[in-house]
Image 1 (cartoon, one colour):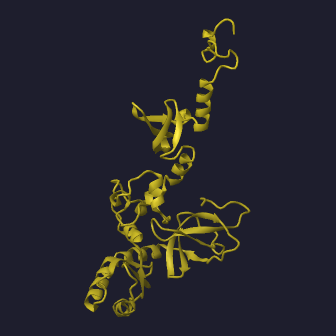
Image 2 (cartoon, one colour):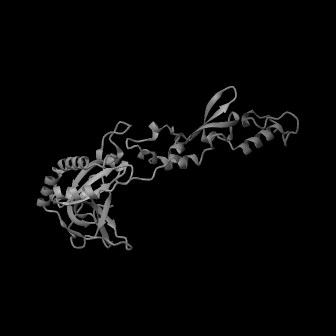
Image 3 (cartoon, one colour):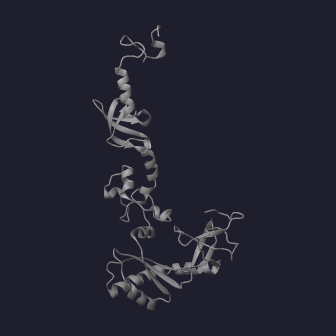
Length: 307
């Protein structure tokens, strides 16, 4: 995404509908004067919405882009603030209606969102199983003079909306800068040597922490240069078994007889085949001096004068 359109390059604009939300791209041919920071009105699959232009992106020829309808006016922005102020009351009404109707005990209603002119009202809820909200939607349509939409969202999206602080003590990543969720697996925690204790790897949403993906690739690349745990390697202390790997420190911990745990930098690790070849050579007669006294291995200044 770039701030200004590049010359001679067909481009589209990136529009965001929430403060920390995914970017959607639109054709701005009919409104070429739009700039990053402007608010625009667009037609989406969920009706007419207002979003903020975040920048420009190269057009992909194999995609169809919806056109923006127009730039938002000061009146549009005032309407948006007015309808946003009514969202909490709308959410309370939804919760009360669901409770009085019954059958929605498993659903947790998280937010109510009006579009900029109040013509559409979306209720966001979460539940373990899929829930049929048809009756509730029809009942709410009698209460609100707007098109009602019910959307079931996942636990990560709930955490993003609610916000708050993570286990690290700072605001949750999903609420501050993550615009999309990446796939996360237990393998990522294992690669980084993180304890698989649920309290260590689970976020406030009850799913694997998003931050597990941040340094995963660096750990994978670093581990490629180091021996695996349990493997025997050559070290300045002889042949030892690797008992721990420290990818970001570029080192390993080995067990040395009579010394215990010893940290060895990667540059000091000797391939086992090479170590054994050196040990074999050290035990063999010198090819130059035979079985007699030999100090070929000493520094040049300490060698005998007859060499």
